Each structure stands twice: as C-alpha cells, then as structure tokens.
Image 1 (cartoon, one colour):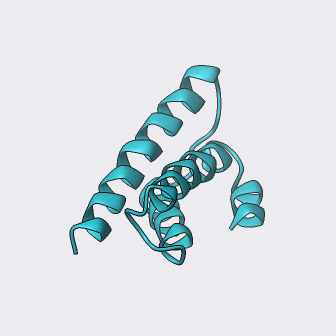
Image 2 (tube, helix red, strand yellow; image 1 turned 135 degrees about the vertical axis):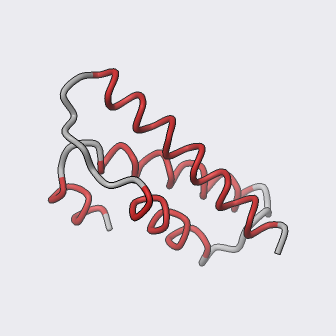
Image 3 (cartoon, one colour; image 1 turned 180 degrees about the horizontal axis):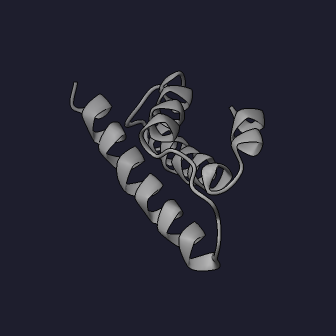
Length: 80
C-alpha cells in the first residue's frame, strides 16, 4: 500500500500514514485485531482519493480527514 500511495502522490502518503497511526493505536489498545490494521488503512485510502499536495494546509487537512475516517472505521470494527 505504501508503494501505491507513493505512486499516487499528492496527499495519499499523508492519508496512509495518518490511517496507519490510528489503526496501530487502536490495535495497541486492543480495540481491533492485528489484521484490521491494513483493512482500515486500505478503506481510508479508498475513501479519500489523492489530491495534489499544493500546500502544507492541504496535507494537514488530508491528515485530519484520514484520522477522522480511520477512527470511524475503528469504531465500526470494535463495536461489531
């Protein structure tokens, strides 16, 4: 997924990183299983297509959106 995000460019690497941080944190808190990590990251990347990273604000916004989306994905998986 990292190579794909790098190839997509723009905000994709920031989205991947943010989603991964949220998913790993949830795993360490025992809220989701280990195999949920890549599923959450993949779901977040699919939901937030890469856009050009024209500014630091664009990257910050992508990071925040990815964290929100990944957090919802964690909540959905932990309540199931």
